[in-house]
Length: 128
Image (cartoon, rainbow, N blue to C red; front, top):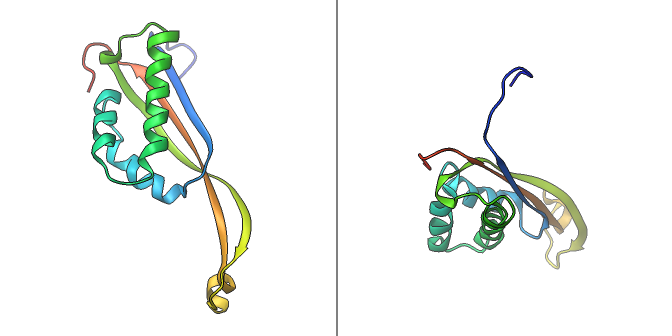
């Protein structure tokens, strides 16, 4: 967007850092709700049977709470602008008790973390 263009859309941000789930597993769930309206996304997340649903649902609820309480926005008019699951730092190495050979990093397990970013925007009356 150039500097001369102006928009009257309000943005709502919510995020979760250092989530103790693998980013790959979180992206599987995020792809299922990407593009849905936030209220519909929370309903879909309630029906998915995966552990990675919990942090995504909390981020959606945080964003909806920010929109309602802080910005006094109507929840029906919101739409998801961006849902991003990024890789966080890798935690400490832990030795596995089984032999795995050289191809699999000799059985070393790494704890993975993720960062979740969600941006909602006020999209008028057509909350897709």
